[in-house]
Length: 303
Ligand SMILES: Cc1cc2nc3c(=O)[nH]c(=O)nc-3n(C[C@H](O)[C@H](O)[C@H](O)COP(=O)(O)O)c2cc1C
Image 1: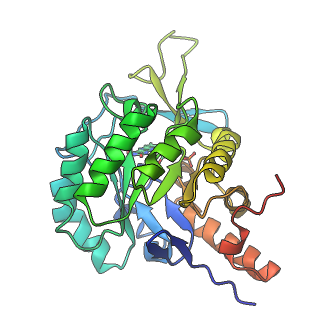
Image 2: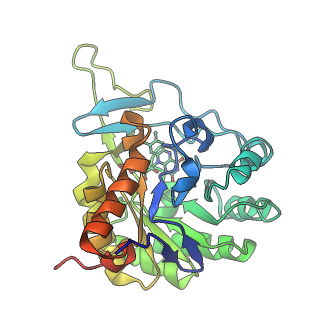
C-alpha cells in the first residue's frame, strides 16, 4: 500500500509530518540549492521580532558530545524585512511557512501576530515562549502557566491563523504549561526547545560561548524530548509537534509513537543540509514497508 503522508494539525493539513526547526534552517531559502524545500511538511522560520536583532556576541555556537550549545540570542532581520525580502520567495516556491515569533512582552507578541495578518503565505504561527538565550522574555513566559496562557490568548486574539506554542523543557511540569496553553486556545504545542548548558575551555578557563550559557540541542537531548512529548501528548487533546535530536527516520518515528503528530528536524541540518529530506524519505519507506499511513503511528508506543 502506498503510504499517505498527510497529517492534520488542528485546522491545518500538512503534506507530510516533517518540518524544520526554527533557527536551524535560516529562512528556508538558504537550503534551496540542496533539495526541494517545498517537499517538506513545512519550515519554521528563524524567530522573528518586531525590530531586527543582532543577537549575542560571538562565539555563539560550540560542539558538545552528541550535540551543540548555542547562544545566538535571536539574531534576525525583523518582521518587516522578512515580509518584504523573504516571504514573497517562499510563497512563490510553494513552501509551507510557519512563522516563529519572539517578543519580550505580551503586547509585542500580539503586535507581531497582527503585523502578519495582512501577509499571505503563512500557514501558522509558532510562538517561542522558551528561548533560554535572552535576558528578557523568552523562557520567562514558558515556565509559568499563567504567563504562557496570557501570551497564547493574546496571540490567538490578534490572529486568524493557527497558533502553535513552543514549550520549554525548563518548565518544572511541562504538562501543566501545555494544559494552560490548550485552555487559552492554542491549536498545537511544540516540544521541546533547547536545555540550558555550559562549556568551559580547560586551557583558557574561559566559557566557550560569549554568553557563558547556551541552549543544548542535538541527539544528546532526544530522550528528554521524547519523555516530555509523551507527557504533553497524554495531557492535551490538541496535536503535539515533537522536536529534539531528530537525525533519522527512526528518531522521528519514535516521536510519533510517543504521541507527536509531526516532527521538526533541527541541529541535524548543521551536519547534513539534506537531513530533513532524508528523515522524510525514510519515514515514507517505513510506512510503505508496514503498509501504514504515518498518522496511524501517533501514540502507538506500548507505554
Ligand atoms: C542555532 C540554533 C538556533 C535556534 N533558534 C531558535 C529560534 O530562533 N526560535 C526557536 O523557537 N527555537 C530556536 N532553536 C531551537 C530549535 O528550534 C529546536 O527546538 C532545538 O534545537 C531542539 O531541536 P534539535 O535537537 O533537533 O536541534 C534554535 C536552535 C539552534 C541549534
